[in-house]
Image (cartoon, rainbow, N blue to C red; front, side, top):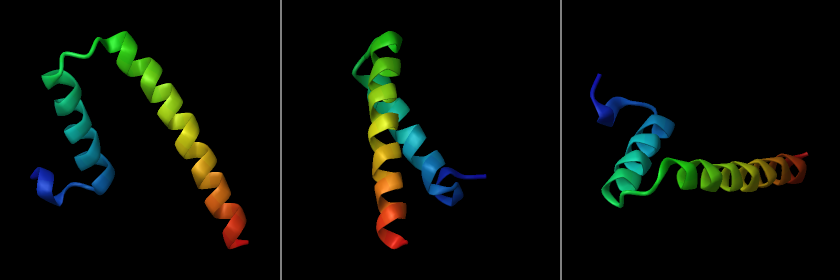
Amino acid sequence: MSLSSAPKHVQLAVDLIQLLEENQIEPEVVLKALEIIGSDYQHKLEKSKNTKE
């Protein structure tokens, strides 16, 4: 399967990994940042669901 036919979340993950690796970001820093990002987007998702109800 080519990346162009992969699901959007897989394409985004590959792009983010490439960006982080090119900038030589330490794995610990990446994981801490992803925790913050995950929390932020979880709140956005919950807010979005609540406004649709």
